[in-house]
Image (tube, rainbow, N blue to C red; front, side, top):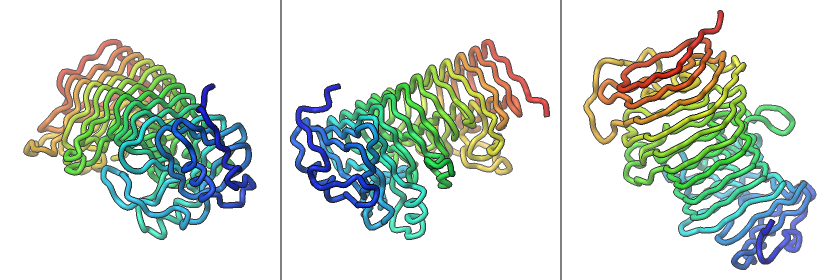
Length: 407
């Protein structure tokens, strides 16, 4: 594989793969020395580092047996301004960062591993609380990002977050953000897998993703801040992926710049709570539209998670996301304003699922703005509970079988 016209090995800049030496300065100096189109090689070994900052027109190549692992020391991760949960804010730097405007043509590849050391760093960041938690990889404002083959592990929060970027290809990676390598839980909430946020022309192909939260979460900002920024996530393909743990592929709930033209196909889900969650709530505004989940399979035998205000079914469309059931009023409309969200033209097709978690299918719109144009076609669903539909217009059903598990 062509990985660049010139090569720099981080050991040429004094980096040591002994699992003890902190190599932050060595690696960043090696990156600074790269010419356009060059490749930075991380050879076999365990290279400890703080925040690493990539630049345009470079390849980061992790050799087989190479591990780039986050340092245990918070001082190696300065507080920077980055996007998180729908707004720019103070955040601890991530292990790998692309920060600022106007980046292009960045490649991350190889058979090695990038480990954010989240089980150690996450609790420290929460305790010190000088900013939001970092990620294993955070990339913003980039045109042309290719990530192939690598293993990405253990983030303090979301594992791989891409903001306001386009022309993104992620293929053949393995991502683990639920368990450490020794099998123990990372034990941190909000541990998404991949989060394309205000991104366009995204392909996530033939990946394995294990997550504590949404395996993939497609986002575009939150409430008034997201509407004002106004950059949608659109033209996104998720194909041939395998998912474990967490909550499958989500559109929302941070979607205030809009989410449109998303296709999820030929994917399998094992012990995830859901295949699909299309979710927003009052205050978000904007629209989720033209979303297709097709030819997907779910088997969920995990009884540790059941229906709640945060997740309501194996296939679910929810405009009361985060609202406890006892507070939901399906009848009384609110005034329609800029914060009233829409969901329309959602297709679930050729899907088989069996779950012990809760509802097989849950669809719930707002009384003032129903969800619209929903298609359920060729679905065989078995769940602890069956199907619920409220405040939905133009629901098309063809070839639907829903069964309830024996109690």
